[in-house]
Image (cartoon, rainbow, N blue to C red; front, side, top):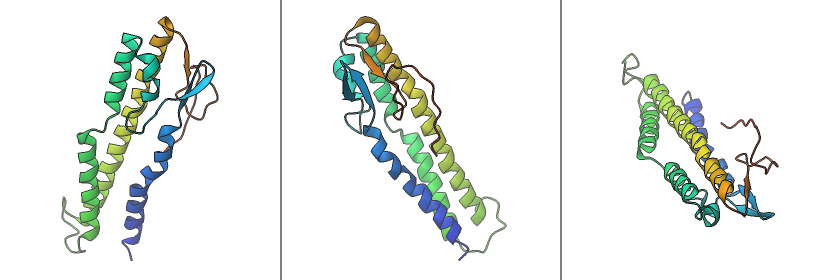
Length: 171
């Protein structure tokens, strides 16, 4: 019965990404007074703007770099898998040997959960910082080409001018 909190925490961590799946395709930009999906597919973010950005070599290069940086990395997958395995081993370990330093039950569970949290924070930080490349690609396109693209990185914002400030809480 004392394993129930650990199991609930693990279940919450495993189900957390499901809520973000629907958000990936909802970003839009305004081009010629029409809304265009920025993320035409869930695998290649920013692909909906490629038709417009490919006219400018600098913008196209920045878009390609943005998409390259958005691909999953094996390092973050390995870190998350190691953390999940540690938590599972800690939950399945019997109560004996609690005083062991590295293989004790609490050490494995807490260490695994820490690895999962660190992996998640690194991934979200990289994703947040990568949005700058897409914004820069749009700015480079708008300097030399028409039609202008109006895009706000915050999907919940009604500000389509491309400028603004926002705060968002996601965990």
